Every structure is written in structure tokens, then in C-alpha cells.
Length: 388
Length: 161
Image (cartoon, rainbow over all chains, first blue to last red; front, side, top):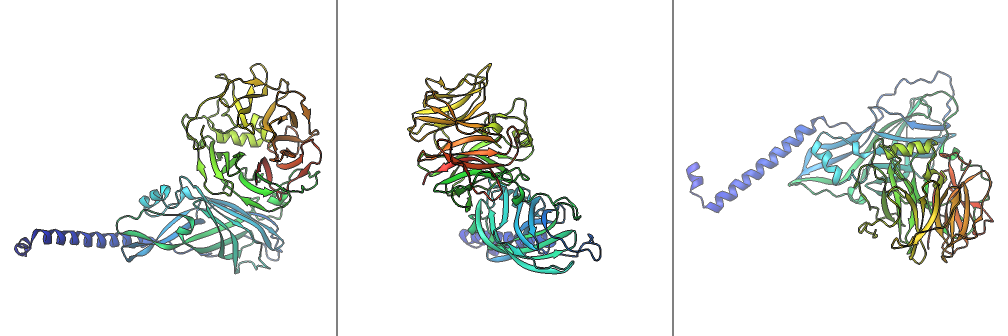
């Protein structure tokens, strides 16, 4: 057989070897995907109800703010089907993070506000190369470190019975890769007494969120995937007691409102934030109305000191990353419609702050930490300037 | 620096005197800013846009912050010790527009020059408290708050339509 192979023309031999190599690569890759995906986690579900305690006969009181309870079992993540050429991989690519925070606010039996933020930089799958790719492709977590879902329509839970699953659709704004889209997120839920559990899967198209991945040779991802979550919420005070709930967004006083509500024309951009979260995003709103439009996503950021360009098309502002030992604030630019976010300045010198009005405090090793002290009451120049 | 982030150059200040809160004049020829005066405190300065001819506008023992030009370029609003003030561009005729126990800061003149938006927080000196955006007439009358549905609001800036 070897003699017959050598008897073939050279180009035929080359073609045969190349073809064989492709087959080996394809089969090998498929087998590798099959082996790697053998432990693919199951889809999101509520699982077993925990014993977290409402005494028999105790009445249900949902009012107040419920926060994401940190736990290794809970997560936000993605599920994508990869393909080798035209052949679907036998298992899903699944990445998850349990670095999630957020809250829901319930008034009576109606969820009036909800927001969940996931640290996308901590997404982990069973393949480190895939995780690494997402840092600068697809989700580009280096540039867009968070994903958020914010409820925009109230949800009436009715009268949930303890331990009984129910289903609802959460209509809200999903922000991935810096792109926000209105979605209808179907969720299973269960009230366990001291906790609410939610689980669900939302089909998404990465292209809708302007996510693109340079396809590796022969390896592709499907055009659709799923955003999954399993989250548990406990009362804001960490327990299930009927104590005074922590302040909700609506409770955060806009200071005693002695002034009347403004009338007239005009549009403003300003930093809006909740006292509890410390962070802040730029919003655009009208002087005489209550409609507002979020321009930047800031659950791990503090965006401040906006300045509009003379032609009214762009806004420059400072962004501080609210993580311990985070980088110093830098100047960013965004269009006044919220598109085109771009970083203008970079770390040239460690500890140098580019934020107008927020010079790095002498001796400070962490401007972010400085920011936290600032927010907690320290006297600083910026505090005076901003009024916050 | 240029709008694309290039061409950065230092315009103002001695090596150890921090300069903050730059604000372009409407015609782009000048920049108002705040500088720490050695042995003193923060005062408002102006300079030409190329950094030449810095001039000190305020000499108050108070802390002066965040200047904002009127659209016609004749006046500058700024924060002083928790109140909003306005003065001529040469520093003359400084007038206090707000007063009281609130902390008022970061004034911004509306594009038509008729109004000034600023941040107001509940208690003077109580930093970290929630703020709200207040709009008043440029003469200090008619203060009214912007609806932000309970969220703390700071750093207003007008968007020209």
C-alpha cells in the first residue's frame, strides 16, 4: 500500500495527506469537545426547596428590599452550542459566575424594582482558553466588565404559597457588552419563607449585543445561546425577620424636597446613584418631566463630572472603578444618545488620577478606596465641588 | 488635549499646586479653573486657552469650586462654601445666589443663559448624603427640583438641543 501511495503523483499525495490531517483534526476536536463537555452543568432550575424557615401559621410579608444572597450555588451565566465545521458539538459550552449582586423591591405583592449585576470578568467555563477569549472578544469583559438586568415593568406575584413554584415574565433592560436591549425574561420562582428563588433561561443572539468572536479554524459558535441564572434573594438585612426593611431606592431621600418640581424645557445629564450602591451612572432627563434615559452603565463604576461638547453631541466624564485597588479614575467620552463609549486617558503613572476634581489623595494607594471614604463622609475638595 | 485624547499638554499651575475643574469659555478663547493657592485655599482663576496669562478672580478665604461660564461669556457661576455665587469675568461684583443650610455645588449655566442647574444635598458639610438637582433662574429666584424618582443626583450638565 505504501508502494502504491508513493506511486501517486506528488500533488495527489499532498492532497491526501492534507485531507487526512483535516479528518484527524476534526475527529480529534470532536472527541475533545465530547470529553470536555461530559460534565456540562444542567440548565438552570429551582432545584429542591431549602428549609429556610417560616414558622407554620406565620403570615407572608413580602414588603421591602430583597438582596441577592451570595452563594456558591447561585449563578448568572451563558450556555452556547459550539460547532466543529457543520457538526454541532455534543455538549454545550457553559460559563458561569457567582459574583452577582442586586436586589428586588416588593410593595405588597408587586415587584416594583429589580436590578441584578453580574461581574462578567469572573465568568468561568470548563475551558480556560474560552474564558481568556471572552476577555477581548465576544463579551470583551476587559472593556465591559458587567452585565445587568433592570426591571422596567412591575410584576405582580399575586399570593405565592410557600414552597410552591410559580412562573412569570420579567420585562426589563438587559445590558451585555455595553449594549442594552429590552427583553422578556421567563423565570421560575419560589418563595421559601425567608428567601425567594429565581431560575430561568433567556435565548439571546450574541449579534444583537454586537458580540463577535474570531472563529477558530473549524470551531464556531451557534448564532443563538442562552443567558441563564439561578439566584436566591434574602431580605436586605440578611435574614428573614420582619424587622424594618432597609431603604429602597424610593426611600433614598432626595433630601427634604422644599422646592417645587421644575417646569419648562431643557435637557440635563447628571450622575444618578443610590445611596446603598455608592456607584453612579450618567442619565439624561428633561427638566419638566420624569422620563430618564440611562447613558452609561455603572454598577461597578462611578461616572461623574459630565461636560457636554459645544456642539451638544458628546459628553466627557470621569469614571472611577469601584473595586478595591481598582485603577484610578480616567476620562471617558460618550455620545449624548449613550452610544460610542470610549476611554480617552490611560494609566501612564501609577496613582495619577485623570478625574477632573478628583486628584489622588496624598498617600493614597487606591483612588477607589479614596472614593469610598469620600462617600462615607470625609472632607475632600471633590465632595465640596459635587455637593454629594 | 485634542478630542481624540492626543496632544496632551500642561497649561497651568506650579508643580505642586493642583488645578481642577477646567471650564471653556463660550468662545473657546479662555479657560476658567480652580487652583490651590499656597498658604491659602482654592480660588477661581482664568487663563487664555493656550495657558498664558493666568489671572486670579477670587480672593476669598472660602473654598471656591467648579466655575461655569454664562453663555454670553460675561459672567461665571461657581460654588463657594456650600452656596452658589456668580461674578463678572474679571472677578468683580460677586453675588451670592443661594443661601441656607443646604450644600449647593457644581453650578451649570443653561445654554440660553436663563437658568442655572446645580447639586443640592441635605446638609451642609454632610458629604455622602443624597443629592438632588435644582434649577433656578440665573438671578437666584425660582429654585425648583428635577424629578429623579428618589435617586441621588449630582453633577448636572445641560445638553444643548
